[in-house]
Length: 387
Image 1 (tube, one colour):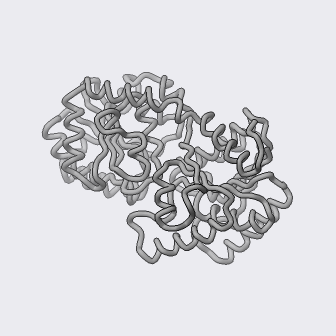
Image 2 (image 1 turned 45 degrees about the vertical axis):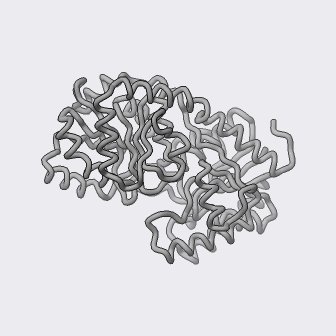
Image 3 (image 1 turned 30 degrees about the vertical axis):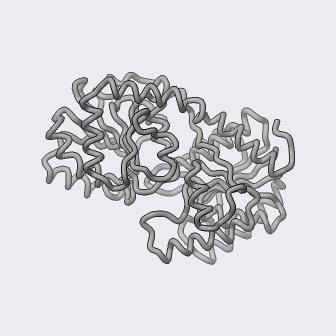
């Protein structure tokens, strides 16, 4: 197949890693002719462009395709995308993320090329101003008329789109966002070595959260729960992986609570370091207020760790209460405290839940599985038999 992927920016993030795995697999495993079109990969999260260029497929970086809304730049991006599509002549265009999703689908339709769009997380979501929410829904309805088929990273995304009358359920296919599972099965370094580097002792109970230190990621609820958890289990250490604009605020709050010794901030780390950090944890916590399907949930389970998460997005599709972890009401603190303390008290429960998660989800979240299913969607859209 000949496929053009379009995404707004290739920062370090779940949607971007999903896209890059798909490109790499199509190029290296299936012999597809692929190319990547992206805007400037700017942001505190870091960039995946070095890895993308190393893969060997063509890449087009458009300065005019920026994340923020800018009518003149957006029009220029639309014109550039039409030109690139005409030049590359793909069988199918595959768009990712909100900005590239709208402009890319419009450009593909204008050129007469079928377009598949992946919903990594709805552009309209909890916590938005109502006017902005309605504007994004309207934009998605407009773009849906220019979409051949949707791929969602969780069933929950289909539900969101159908409830907002963006399209009908038969136009959506769920393909879970795959990644390289092997380092989560066997990390490159031992948990003991990684914990020692972080100043964590064998007797510490490590509660880890992987997320940007940013709004809607829910760190504030973990901080609110921390005093009660530490009072009950003084050996608890909270390992916060990631960086962002709220770090200084969180550090000040932790110092005010007198819990500085109980928190470890890693700052920004490369994706290759995530598996060993997950293995250094005893419990994986995810308290975001909005997500598509956070990759840390299957990553934690495949690493044989129990997961405590708020019931948002596709979390309930991998976190099964009583079996693989705890599914809690969004923004809850008492329930979060109770869940972590229960796991802290019961190493056997932690081991059982982690083992169940690894057995259930390892094969489902392999990036090779994801790419095969995506190519099946392409084949269906093109009226071909998948090969």
